[in-house]
Each structure stands twice: as C-alpha cells, then as structure tokens.
Length: 445
Image (cartoon, rainbow, N blue to C red; front, side):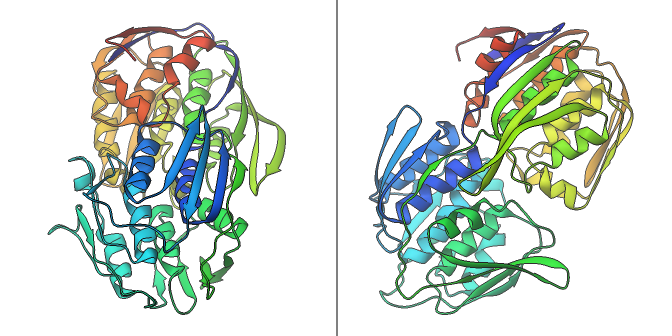
C-alpha cells in the first residue's frame, strides 16, 4: 500500500479512537490466565493484538471476537498447554515479553519467535531476571529471539526477586510481575522512573496483592503471591488509544484552521507526556468530560490548530511519551525554534531505530534535523517543504507520523509500504478521511 497526502487547509469533526493497544494486549493475556470467562469491550483488532490471540490459541485458550468485543475462556495461570510449534509473535516485542512472563508462571515449555525485526530487539533485559527467579529460559547468542522455555516441575515455586530495572520498561515490568505470580515470596521491582502502570491496575482489579512504593526516591512495586493463583475474570471497556490519538492531535495542530474532538481517549498519567510537551509548545488542547472507568482515566480532547514553539524533552518525560516521539517530531518540525530530545536512546530499540529512521525521513521532507546517539535536534522554521517519497522502515508509528507531516507540508508526501499502519491503527486512513484530510491510497488498505 502506498499513501499520498496533500496539504490540508483544515480538519474538522469528531472521532472515537479504537481501544488502547497496551491495555488490549494485557487484557487478552490476563483474561487467559484468569479463572472463568472474561468479556472485554472495545478491544483493539490489529496486527499486533492478532499475534497475541494466535499465540493464546496455540496455548489452548479459547476466545471469540464479536466486532470489537473479546470473550476469553480463562485456563488459569497454570493451565497453559505446550504449543505444537514455536509461538509466532510477529513484530510485537510486547507479545513476546509478556508471553515469556506468563509461560514462566505457568511452567509451560514453549519457543517464542517472530519477524527478523523482532529478532534484533533486546531480550536479555527479561532473560537475566527470569533466570535469577529460576525460570529455565534461554535466548539466542546475542540475547535476542528466539526464546526457549523449558517445563518446570509441577508444584515448584519460582524464587522471589528484588530487581532494579536498568531502563524503565513497562514490558519488562509486566513480564516479571507475571512470573512473580508463581514465586514463593513477594517480588519487588524498582524502576529509574515510573513506566506505564496498566499492568498494576489490571492485576489489582483481578485480585492480585500489589503495593506501590519508593526505594531511594525511585518508584517500586511489590507483588505478594497467593497460595492459590486464582485471578478473577475481567469485565471492562478499553479506553481509546492515546498513542493512536497522538497522530490525530498533531494532525489538527499542523493543518491550519483545524478543530478536532477526540472522544474517550485514555489519559493514564503514565502515558500523557506528549500532552505535557505539546502544552509547553503552546498547543491549544483542552481536556473535557474527564472521568475514571475501571481504574483508568479517560476524557475527550479538543484540539485547535495554532503556532508552536520548540521545547526540550529529557528524563522522566521521555518514558511518559516513549511511543509518541514520531508524532512529536512532526509537531517539532512545524514549530518555530529549536526542539531538543535527549536521554531517549531506548528509541533505537523499537520496531525500527526510531532516532535514525526519523531523522533520515524528515530530512527527505526538508526538515533541519540533527541526529544524536540518544536523541535528536530539530531546528523548526514553521514550514515543511515536503514533496518527497518516504520509507517508514517497517515501523507503523513512523508511517503514520510521516503521513501527518504531509497535511501541513507545502508539497505532497508519499508514504511507501504504508500498510504497516494496520499493526496498531488499522482505521488511520479512514479517520483522517473523515476529518477532511486529502489522501490517495494505492494498492489497497
């Protein structure tokens, strides 16, 4: 699929976002580990969640989808069965890392594998602590997939863990908390800064004893396992995906004269660093109808186009907006002044090297960008020439960000291999079209 985007004078309308990807991932897996049937509304049906659901089928879990309503017949934490072949995690590191934790708790033998891109992503960050817990797991020679877990004897508990994560990572934290369900004593995890906490909220709602705290000023979480590992089934509606909303937010900011309302967006405070950064840039974004549902904050966002100024992003803010940097970089390209991102080397270990790929593709559009080891600097002039073909390098978020850049660019932007957007936001082109964006799709959706 090839997508060409024309400069848009204004975007107008209201959009309801598909379910949050991070929460959908967790809901499907945690429901499989529960006792009884779970019902999950507004589940994200996409490439990455499809990888999770296919893996659950291979592990003996029965589930059904009716539109965006997911029903899962839980097998219990220890009920996963060994798959006949390797579990294909696709291009989803989230799927691989969370499944590793669930399989560790279950004591189930399995091999986890995926695309060549996924095979390049670091897995030693879960291998080392899992092995310290007594999990029989091995990675490839470079600490990457495929991952192989051996069966654990029935009734043998894992060792409790006190572990300081080198990098704040919700995926690693989730993996280890799931494994800790089968430990003999409480496990404590300490992060440099707080990563997204959907796992803690969801497990607590299922009856798991979790306690948040601090160790030397750093956030920590302690899980106390129960003698019987019985998780209550889920009954929930998933909020709209903030990471998907990020592209529509920036689209409305850079297309002159726009006013867009995004309904029911998840506003978990560990996810909204982009909002804080855009507000610092002078963006006119209002939160309306804010409420809390099933432990998660959500609300409606009203976004109006306007001038932006460059800002600096580093430290804990990086963690709070780690998935939104492609969209943020586009906002920075249309801002006036210098935008500097540092302490964000983790971006090099996403679906693509997001620092290198972002810088290379933005340069094609005429953006003044300088690549650094742990970030980038954009010298914004308020204008982007555009008029180029760009390659998202197999990265769904980069594809959508580059498409958004075309809305405000002086000349059309063509995104090659744009079908990768369906990994996380299959409705992206539909939503943009509903708001009035000028799009031309070639080669199917």
